[in-house]
Length: 342
Image 1 (cartoon, rainbow, N blue to C red):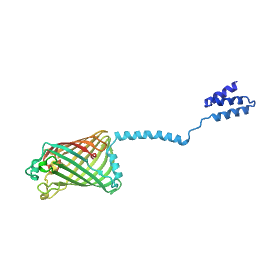
Image 2 (cartoon, rainbow, N blue to C red):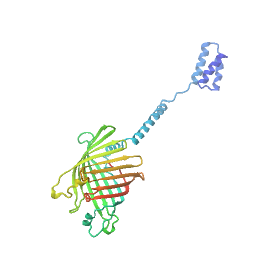
Image 3 (cartoon, rainbow, N blue to C red):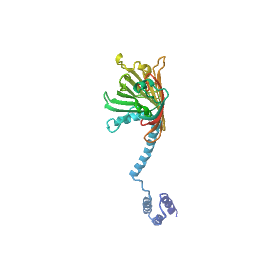
């Protein structure tokens, strides 16, 4: 009996069913030890579990490995830098003629209110009519690659164009004209950088030649040319562009806006904090002189649809537009933003 019980326990542990146990009696009845052991071995081999196919096992391992990688990517995107991925995407699309690459922010503010309007310049252009404090303001800005890897890898030459518009849309007495339009083409030599210091990442350095004008004739003509150097810094969800510029001198008789750098300063700081649902930004300019002229702009964007963000802009100071370079402006507006700044 003992000879039968031990093999039964062993086979049950291997997954043998009750139907297979009947064969054990035949094995136990064999008198020859060698034949009896061979019989038990044969039953055990038939009861052994079949290992999984290699393809199924590999698929299970692959599935286990992919999930953590996806989670890591999502976490990095949410907590890490946000300008660098956009620059990498631009690099991938530089030769795609069906893709328009944004430069500065693209936005439309259907309603803005300026509590300190420049009536003197308005009276020259539209005598006999009043200027409204409410205006439409919008900006379009784009760039395209001209020469990739011009001086080695990751050194690119871009052409960019930005246009700002201020429209007296609600001033029907003056036929709702565009009060001011500023045109700003520029050439930009952009150098990718990977310098780190105390958690701050210097992503990019730019050198540009910039022309800005309002396309009007005297006495309302305004224009200037600058050489600009900029550096982009990132730290987690905050990005900062520090810029300094030098105004290219003009002959005194050709200078439409003398001492414009006294009001517009010689540089600016532009920063953005980005959260999953909204962004906060600022632009600060100052002449760093005793008279302390300059400006600051505050920006807030928030989601309203998959394509557009709601946008609130507040500007205070000098140089919102070229026609107002020496007049202080105090404007707030609300509308939509199509792209992020920087």
